Length: 126
Image 1 (tube, rainbow, N blue to C red):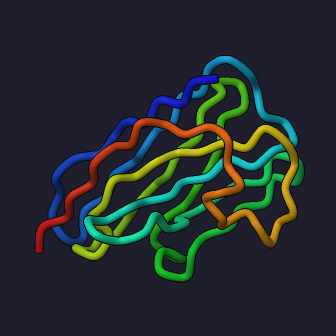
Image 2 (cartoon, rainbow, N blue to C red; image 1 turned 60 degrees about the horizontal axis):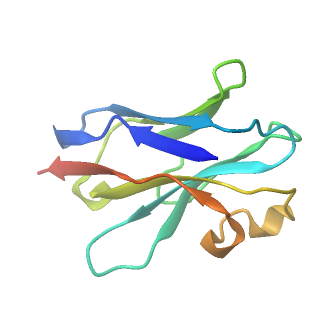
C-alpha cells in the first residue's frame, strides 16, 4: 500500500490550497483515512479524517469551518481543501490510512494508522 501526498506550497494568509492523497495497492471501504500535520518542534496532530464505513467526516477544532476532508472512491483519492489559511497552519501534512475499522473516538490518534504518505509542506506567510 502506498500513499502519495501532494499539493502543498507557499501561500499567503487567507489563501487556499487543496492537498491530494493518491492511494495505491488497496481500497478502503470501511477503514478510516485521515490527514495529520506536524510543525517544527511539535508533535504530529490530527487535522481531519473520514470514516469510509459511514462516510462521516471529522475535523480538528482548529480547522473547523476552514478545512474540509473528502474522498473520491473511484479515484481512490482523499483530499483536504484548506481555505482561509493562517500562519499557524504551516506544517508538513501527512495522509494516513488504517488497515481495519476503528473506534471513532480514536480516529484522531496517529498511532492507530498503519500506512502513511511521505508528507507535503504547507507554508503560510503573514
